[in-house]
Length: 545
Image 1 (cartoon, rainbow, N blue to C red):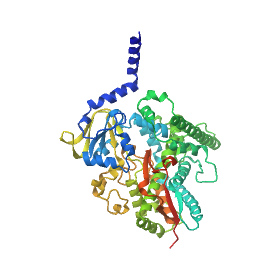
Image 2 (cartoon, one colour):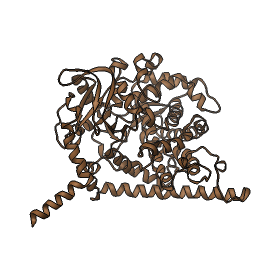
Image 3 (tube, one colour):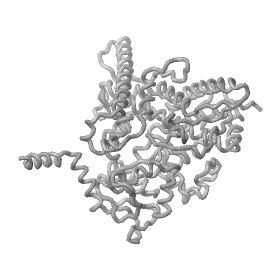
Image 4 (tube, rainbow, N blue to C red):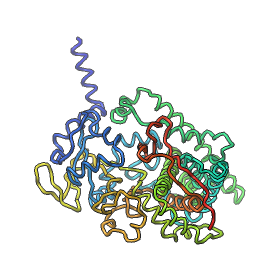
């Protein structure tokens, strides 16, 4: 009797998709062409090399592997599965430009969905194409030009706050956690620019509103333990509740509730305006004129004269709110934090930049003005190259294929190859940070913060398939960052405003700096990890010449 029951249970388990997926994970390496790649051994069958990579600082482990195995090799993921490490511009460009054939793995989408919701960064295939086409005008040059005044206004507000902190020290340097303040500033910006919503996060006298608190909760939820790692791989384990899941679910519920309120409020105002104008019972495209993100979403949801392939459901519209609130401010605040850190380590570069920024003081700081400053542009490019907020990404082959490579590589049998054969289900890791720091492209000083390199950019850098700045900081291909123009101009507005006014120096030994990745790379201090991410710098006012 027990044998029969046990056999039945086993048969049912074997029929569940998650169990089948696990079995395929375990079996695939024995049939995949990746078995012919060189690569490091894994210290753990369960974690593979993943924990090693997470603990590795400043890409040290990746650099070691590259030196030992070359630019194409494999490493181990969870359950001993093989992953291709493709440090090759042609291979990376091919994978990124074939978004249908190489998609985000389900476990990555699950983890993203937990934090960012099921918006543009989560969806794949035709749905992603549709949503990106609808929302792209919100991030075009015309719209960014109009939003620059918000970037500058909030940059000035942050400058004034730091000025107050600096003057309280009676001539001494003030210690400012620039990451915390930049998070507040960029959250204010995406709220106003994207959704016409005021977080008022920079108002230190007011209690943070609940949407602000929800966004902060997402980033204070920390990484995962073994159960959370397994839940991303084995869906049937997701029924087991964890404290992290509860916090994230509560934060997502708050963002969805307030997002729905924003949407319904704008819809009601629009219907009222249409009724007052011509009494027409229907809303058309011409009735919704704005190109901000919220207006475009509402047009795709409400306009009755839009074709079916241009429409978005209430659920799809609502899913964009947490995606853009979180991703839309965290990348920029992280990037500017690293820019100020890089400048704090090299006063010569900081002085040269400040001299350029102080040469002219236009009455209106416009997008065109910010884009006309060559050394500011070089500093931003160098920041995004050296301190890329997203260190890497992964795609999974959706069919058997051969990924072309720019250079030959050697497999573990000593055979020279010109492409990487992959089987359906094989993961391909795209090492953004490693490519942005590769000495073969950038020279022996690739690990240094050196904006001057952009005055005579290496010829090899032209082959990097990024959407901006000859780096992969904003990715590339059809899934490249939709908001890269928004982020670049916001960065320039912040650096322009802050470096004109303040001098930044390090307040800690750089050897204590530790990096952790949760969507973006965030700085921690050794011995103070429990305090959360931080970047405390000395800030002092620089007198006008």
